[in-house]
Image (cartoon, rainbow, N blue to C red; front, side, top):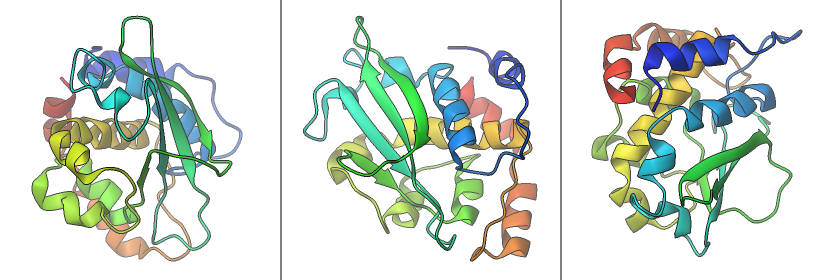
Amino acid sequence: MLPVYALSAVLLASPAHADPVRLLDAGYTAKLCEAWNGTSLPAALGRSGSGWIDSAGSEGSQIIVISRRDCDGWPKVQLVIQADESGQAVCQSGGAFPGGELQWQFTPTTEQWADFTDGFGVMQMPGIMSGFVGPYGVAAANIGNFEVFFAAAGRLALDLDVDWSCEGADAEDVAKKVAGIDRVDMAAILD
């Protein structure tokens, strides 16, 4: 696992986008795939970890679809996670979701994406259940891994200075949640 400062350096070294990156657009999601691989998630969700990579009726390949349910018409994006030769759950690609089969779907509100950045646990589970797809028991057994996922997503959003706005979200409430993200808590999750 890369230290948080190294993860940030890897992400910021990527070529700049001509257009601003927006939270959960295809460009952000491609970088989220890179960020996934720099965390504890590949080992923790792999065959020697929780075994999540072989859950949800799939063996060695998972598709996670994510979006923001408060954003009118916001397109869904996906992370494609596959077991590598050592059984680790490695992100292979991130980008637009073309439709079709998936094993997991998370559609928190924009405020919830910000809120979950510096801590996620049982009390936050109801916040993602609207639009959730996947076996609840497996999800509950991996709450600590969800915490790492949301911290990595939030850290990336802050490091890239993404545009959190969208039509349908309350801009003032989102701005307050983003401003309230505790980088110390986030760093503790990712270290």
